Length: 232
Image (cartoon, rainbow, N blue to C red; front, side):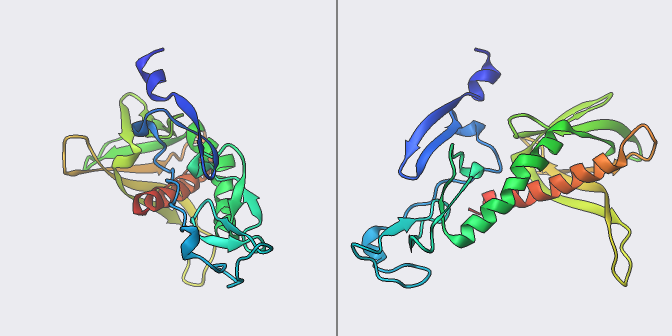
């Protein structure tokens, strides 16, 4: 097994919440992932934390796998996929958490694939007035933004500080906007200073502007998940 394969290896673990397929090394975890929350101890929740129903032999308590709080079966009946915590099967979640997880499913089912397939942009580094046509994609292990052209860059996702999506088409009276680029700020390992890159969707017919807009929309969603993971 090569060094890269070893770092990306996964293992099956059993937790109180269910089976999880997690990276063998914590350093290899996805930057979009979430840690399992600690469960509220049974002795601290005599009643459902949603509807206030008292727990007894008939009304049993259940823990939401996403927030760790105690609920009755009525308030915590949905089993929904939770890929951000690497669960193998759908797990029990409260109504509020289930709704959030269902919305995230679109990212994992569709937008993550868009990011990995990549799109073409003109990339400008720092204050340079020169740009380079490059293919930008998310690495398969989700930890790097890979840029390929005459030059090659690999930006570690966890080093990204800010992402600003650039749009056009906005009017004072409202209307549709279209993503046309982004400004990315990140730290280079070993330096505390921020490096800036500007991505602009290519205008020529050989590049699919619709694909670039879809990639930017997916990157916008990925940024939100990244910020949530950091704030956990």
